[in-house]
Image (cartoon, rainbow, N blue to C red):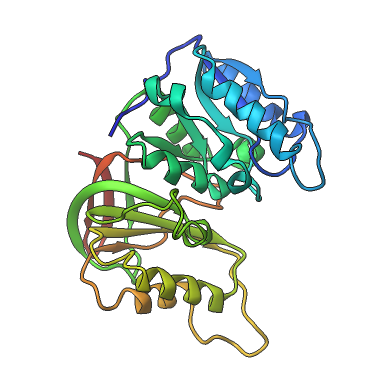
Length: 298
């Protein structure tokens, strides 16, 4: 995988929105954060634009993101927020210049569309918090973002969940938001998970829908040859009046019960204030035992 160049002081980061609308006031904490890190900030035209739910029309969001992709002075593009809308523009973006000189694409949730599309170019991306969240993020989450942008020394050690499956594996890290991964099936933005360590997280979904997603991913061979599974926040899950009868962890364990790979639950990433950064496309080592789970760069 191709690794974008790590940032240095005085480098420039662009903030744009590929999906839902957002105001300049809402991203001010993120602007302050970047400046405190010694970085310059360029604000995309989509910040403050409104077209119903979106940060401008599809054409405006395409133009804004494309300008940042093509601008050689921009060393990273930080997507301002998720919501919905990235899939509406992905096929109109031209990644020709980006593939020549890759830069960090940062975000999560709806930005899973970009993570997976770019993974198929053989380029790393950064699954991390977004400007909309910075004012509420933990210090650890923000420190992890900085570390991933400026160096390659990131590693995590967490207490093991009772639902974990032990094992030690290595492989490229891929994944993102579970619902988005499901929605990309059959498109040229869907990824080949064979030999990879898969990360998933989700927000505000019904238990039955999580089950349906996982069953269809399984039927599509998504889990057949993965090396391991990392489950982040399954946040604010919902149930019907007649209960589905299983928790999110139980649904996941049931879906992958035919496979024998290590699983980490409750990794602090996703729709959480403690949303720690992960580099997609980077080879990592996953070591899960009864007491701790360790994720480290190989």
